[in-house]
Image (cartoon, rainbow over all chains, first blue to last red; front, side, top):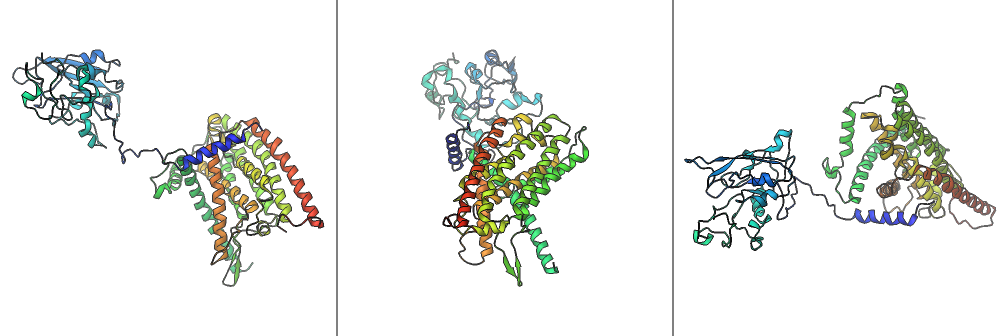
Length: 218
Length: 346
């Protein structure tokens, strides 16, 4: 017979070897694998520590998005109750997660690091409309906690999401690689320093010395 | 048969019936677990400890599912086919001896349902009737893929049955009987028929794989070509019957290979009841063979149909014939007194 008996014996050896190996399965809701740093999960819109939104409605993220999944409409800040520091803020901010390819180009494009990737990956949509996340879901709470639709299996990962800041070195400065320069923790950050001021003189604890904080402080 | 004899028989039938059902359940679970671990995954682990109740859960689910009958199906034959798969599978198991038997309230209870003097032929007859189920199922479904599966089933199973029965002939020659209890007794505690008959053992096992439509010979229900083969159009409890029958056949083939070649329930008795030890050895040997069934299923890909027929007719049957003649010749010499009793038996 044409069948190679030696090959069959060898194959039987392979399956028997595997039989005694540890299964690679991760029982997801029960066991949660630690996510790697720079994990590209769902986006969040960040705030400064004083609760101000970081987004200035510049639409650079929408422009750079290769999947054209971001829709931004800016608006002038109300003078008496500003939403973001500066002139404008993101009035409408929508991401269609059925289109998003999680490339994080929006994160690199953002001048204020308003949009960053997080560790959140537990999505579930019952229809297409639900896949379009507006500001109500994207924007973090004033205390920096990301919001989520529905039940959350891995609430601890909310607190680990500080890693997103390391995902791209701020403003492309390699010296900041691996250093959380603006955000100490999830979704929070300090406002850009004033002219001639750096993080140390501003007296903010837990931030790296301001070598070059992105050039968006003029 | 007096009342007590009848009662003992009835109880043993019930015990074997439910024992076989439970063992089948465990076999289905075992296959899924073994296959999973061989693919470095966990497999069913939710229902019961280690997922052992998964078969029961699946059975209940299938029982309550709608059983769809195709519009063009031949209704009577269509409903007959799964029953024809199930009944011979159970009947074939009736001849298998699990142990030497034991005495209770002054009566001998054989650990076997029926010790037929043509036990071996009974098994062949039952497995031949079993073929009708896949054939009729394929034909009566009124659909193309089942028909192809049924055609394959009839050709494959008939040709492999020839190879299988030829592999059993040396056993009969050595044991001098077709009674299964005699065949087991002819093999000593250690000197089993696998020693002189190692090639027929392998051929019996390979033919058994083909006979039960197990991979790599599952041409009858080849998913990649024929959707589900002969049971494509079956759903619900009728499909469950086919599924159950397949696994009972696996158990029966393993049990028969144990009985013919591995000494059946023979094995060392350490203490206590010989009947219990017989059962333990029998179950152990059968389980090892069933494990090999799973192992082969996980490892070997399905072979092509023409190669399957070639292998059956051009390899298995000729070699078996030659082997049978050699054994017959040697045994004849031995009976005439020209040779010492090498093979045991008799």
